Amino acid sequence: MNNIIKVESENLETLIKLSLELWPHHIYEEIEEEYKALNSANNAFFLFKEDNMYIGFIHVSLRHDYVEGSNSSPVGYVEGIYVKEEYRGKGIAKSLVKSGEEWAATKGCTEMASDIEAQNHVSYDFHKSIGFKEVNRIICFIKDIEK
Image 1: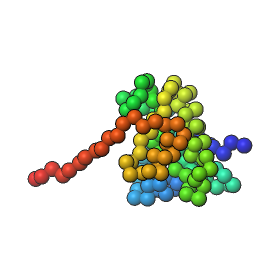
Image 2: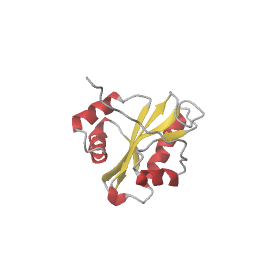
Image 3: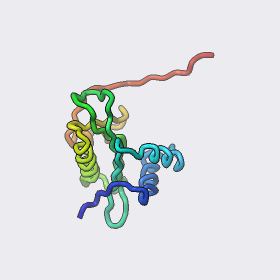
């Protein structure tokens, strides 16, 4: 039995609720609007369901612009991935990434990329454990313009 399903309109609410667990500083309507705008051939969302409960998701996209460390275009890109904490360490996220890779391959991709926040050591260890290699580190800055 396949526990991974592609998100359609009937399970968009579930995706949004899981997204709010990952990004609690956002609001429901904000994420809903963003996801509806992303409904295209260049984005895919997958949910992981176990014991009649949705416990994780992945958002993958196609990036046609330059992706750090890539040698091809388009590149499949992990835009976001989440598994409820009590289900982590069971290979669910790895399965979600595999589904994303399979989707990206059907779109002509030969590479998959991702990024993380520098302080997110759990995500760093996960990416390394499933075969991603670090290609660069980028630190971004911002400041207010003095008036």
